[in-house]
Length: 431
Ligand code: ASP
Image (cartoon, rainbow, N blue to C red):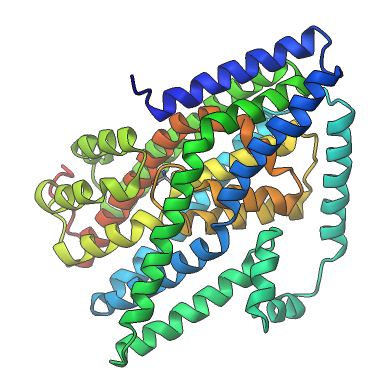
């Protein structure tokens, strides 16, 4: 009998948790056997899994961003639609990250975990890193100069340590130059298809990692619960509820509000017309897999203009992921709270910016956001192993955030398409 992967992950979470809690409460945590299992076997399994995801970060982000810029450049004939789509993407992503961060800061789902000696050491190291980052604050001119790196390989190394921006800027400049070459009629098909293949290979590697995921979840959850005890499960439930609440707020308040403000029509009719696509996104947890359905819906049922909706939906499947951005912000702050790492204003702003960017650079496949979450965690000094805590519930959250991602693409397609033709025109479904 073949168990579906998400059930295997939930089972691994429960079994790893039960075994870890049992060892914790029976006081076996410091016995030689448990120490050996925890620090050698389970540590190695968890680490190999995390490293498989980590190894994709540099090629994946590079190929995704370069191809994204090229795709944008190809929409040249669409004039102001591109500018509007970018503006709506940035504004809506910012709203969604801010909702997530505000909820996490107000309700503090990860606060109050009692730390054992090992975790206190982790906490101290993380605090030292936060302080070092803060004391290295540079003046704006210097920051700008360093963003435009003279050393792309160095920037790629920096990306693995969590310093992603300079590397992203390099990818954007590279993508821009390639776009101009292509537009100028120069031959670049080989490079473009190479990048497409690099991107596909990275997704395959993430697929390999996912095969290992049930074992990794068991190992990482065992190691976490053995030191934290049962308290972590109630925190986890609280965290899941907060993510879902944030996603609903973005959909029912922000999207509804923007649709109403810009198009002056009833947004809930629009949402109702999109229900089939939402269901498809929820069950596949993949924006890419849902794209053909969204395209069909936009043209046949919503009556949106073909060219702009095709452009917005295709680019948006990767570049507009509001649900993912919200989820990343909540997750990073939640894990920082679990590990007792207090983030100052500067670090929080960094999380906001990186989450917005992460929403833009995430592949539209199940678990596509995991590599960028790991980079974000590394950047603020929370151990990437913390990811193990949330992996058991990630499939469910992935289904929820993907639904918002796809919904956001359709909202932007309606906003851009509805106003592009004669200003007041709106999608057919808005009554
Ligand atoms: N599964 C998401 C999507 O396809 C990406 C992610 O957040 O992992 O939109």
